[in-house]
Length: 121
Figure 1 (cartoon, one colour):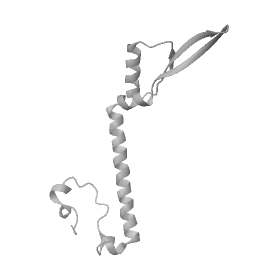
Figure 2 (figure 1 turned 90 degrees about the vertical axis):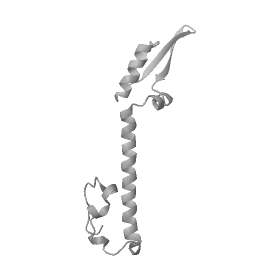
Figure 3 (figure 1 turned 135 degrees about the horizontal axis):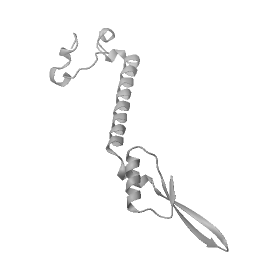
Figure 4 (figure 1 turned 180 degrees about the horizontal axis):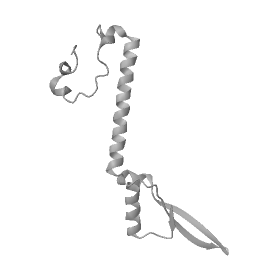
């Protein structure tokens, strides 16, 4: 957290860059006023705000979020298959118990099909 009366562009640009490098940093502007003989301070958070973060996300952060979503979708799909197998096994063809469920990497699946990777295809 950096607190000052104001921030030149060089500071704000640097803070945005540091934020994109995954450093959690805030800019707080402070103002001082005299009210009835007393000093009063006011603080305003100028960075990081949700609106700014939406436009300054680093590509790495965006990619990480996309990868996490993809992993979550895969987990949901696996869970759906397990639910199907337990709830309605009649919908799955015979022999699924002996099938190759943990086949490892299949880099040419779209080109060669399942026949290239399992006996049952």
